[in-house]
Amino acid sequence: MQNANSLANKIRANKLQDGFTKSDVLIKDWSGLRTAEEVTNALTVLRDRNWLTLREDRGTGGRPAERYYINPKVKRAA
Image 1: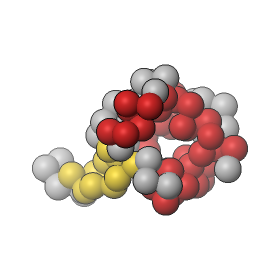
Image 2: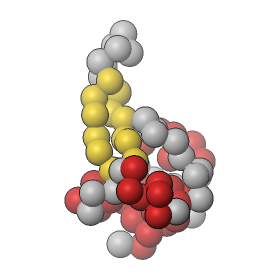
Image 3: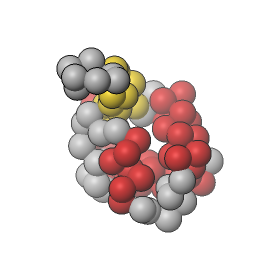
């Protein structure tokens, strides 16, 4: 849960934009979100709580990218 709270705080602070990827979070090297497992757990919790929607981007020319989109209600509440 702590990882999800960390990511939620970053989203509220507009540190991530719509269409971000797991790699976008990992590159930031934020506390509590430094490993792929921590980020995956946080993303799963926020998806389950309807903060995020996952969509596959097949226009990458290779393997589809998983992109996360922020619920507009979350953006308005920030």
